[in-house]
Length: 168
Image 1 (tube, helix red, strand yellow):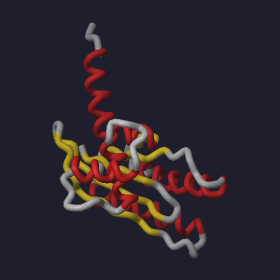
Image 2 (image 1 turned 180 degrees about the horizontal axis):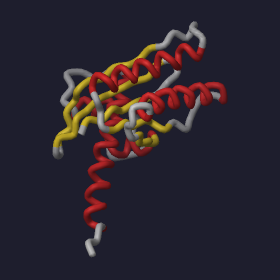
Image 3 (image 1 turned 120 degrees about the horizontal axis):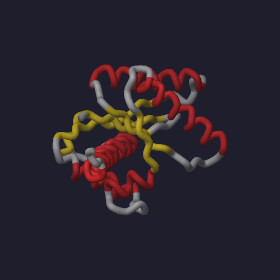
Image 4 (image 1 turned 180 degrees about the vertical axis):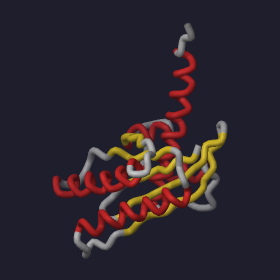
């Protein structure tokens, strides 16, 4: 299964693509979409949408995992972040892909083992888990962490589903 993880942001949207093959997680690609803060905000949202649409078309993921962000510096930042998340989600659902959302706490728990992990701990663990030659750019690393969280969560759901699926 190919998973696209997204760390949405109105200035920088990180993306990370992994493949889950059995119990192995394989890094495929990662990066960030940078928008120019001088541009009109709708143009920035369009750049996020088009950038993610191109990535989806190129790598053909089977699932999209998006960080569900609850904290923002102020109300205006929260609104912009929500709109960036919306652009990312629309890029996925417009081509029929399922979208899964995870909180930062869930991502940190899945990657590091504690929801109180520092950002640098998450970055180092992603580097180790995916055998990266170097720590990925901050937003891309966060997006890879969201993808890893989904890979672990999907695996857990499958195991629990088979344990509680009673055949009649």
